[in-house]
Each structure stands twice: as C-alpha cells, then as structure tokens.
Image 1: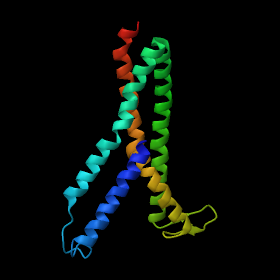
Image 2 (image 1 turned 30 degrees about the vertical axis):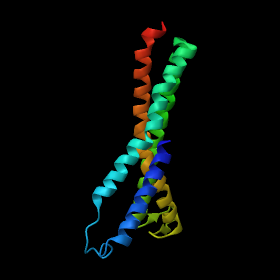
Image 3 (image 1 turned 180 degrees about the horizontal axis):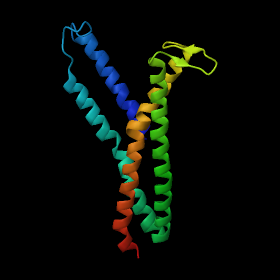
Image 4 (image 1 turned 90 degrees about the vertical axis):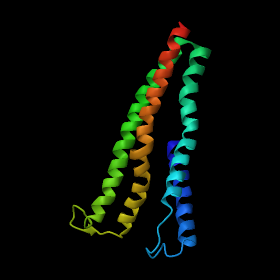
Length: 166
C-alpha cells in the first residue's frame, strides 16, 4: 500500500510539473519561478490521503482479532506482525540502499567488472540501475520506515485492548 501510494503521488507530481512547464512562460529556460507551494501541497495531501487505509488497517485489525477471537490469537497476531514487519522493514531499507548505491557506482565513472570491462553511465547496465533506484528510493525512504510505525501502532492498540479481553 505504501509503495502504491508513493507511485500515485509521484505521478500527480509529474503531472503538476508538466503543467507548470506548459503554463508558466520562461520556466523551462530558468527565467521564471515554479509554483513550489502547489508541489508541496500535492505531496502533503497525497501523503495524508494515501496513508489513511494502512493506518485504519493497523488500528482495526487488532480490534477485530481481539474481540472476535480473543487474547491469545491477538498475541499470536502481534508476534507475527512484529517479526514479519521488522524483517520486511530491514529488507526494504537494505535493498533500497543497495539499489541506490548501485546507480551511484555507475555515475561515479562507471562500474568496473572483475574481468576489467567497464559499464559507463548511459549503458544498458546503468539504465537498469536507474530502474532499480526508482524502486529502491521508496523502499528505503517511505515503505520501510512506515512498517516500523505500523508495528508500533498495532502493538499499542493491542496493549490498550488487552485489559478488555481478559
């Protein structure tokens, strides 16, 4: 859900930047100032609007499991969410950083293979690393860190419910 939210927000931003290039004379040449307030508004609104569903899921799932199944299944769910959430967050942070660093290795003069051949910036391998970085940035900057918040939120909701369930 977080990765999809980043993609949707990015497309909204791209459309706004394109609109500004078409409608603001001299912007492309650097003679006019962009409407940065509109871009900040798009980013803020998208981040708030797109995180409602994951937040609701994090709050409602422990409530549903606790009241429908009881305290023990809620504890099991909480253990599963914690283990899988922490591992997934670590994976996303490391994989995103690796994809980001792979692209940087090409842009710092090209990537040298063990056999001595060099893949320069603009090569097919560099283009593949750019695609990887496009996925890696939201992995390490948004989706991974948001999983930590999700685990904490579910834990707090479960702890608040615990006295009502026993």
